[in-house]
Image (cartoon, rainbow, N blue to C red):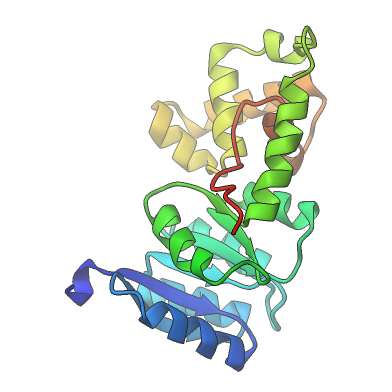
Length: 228
């Protein structure tokens, strides 16, 4: 396979031994090429802007700039890049935070190694991918919510079709500009829809909207739940 047809990956982790291990693992895959390594969040941002990788595999806990802020800056300047979080933290708050930022997936470092290359391929296609334990947990939360018969939220009913579309896109991590481009409306109109949704739902931050969209089944974040 030619280099040009491979999925290009930037590794960002402050532990050299971790980066070396990940690089060795990925180099065994014929369709994946590691084109850069970063030891800090700020270095990850700089290299992403220089190299334009297809996927950034990002740790959260890094010096100078953490992975959350690095993810935010990368996706703001390079919306086509996919960020896949690889972290030791198995906590819903972290998962929801990176979802709100627009990260394409979340893997915990205890996940079986072969899931990494699988996740890279999936997020490159535009899909989301989560560690089996994380995906299973979120899927169960979604099922519990959908299983409550007759408890359709009046707030959902009160949202217009356009407001529902904007809410879904916000929860999927799209920026105002991306929503503008997708729906063919102005940024001011997007902002107005966002304000209306927040007021109607009495939710006033993106993370809260994301949690709401997951709980009510507006979006699905749980994919690839097969356990090995």
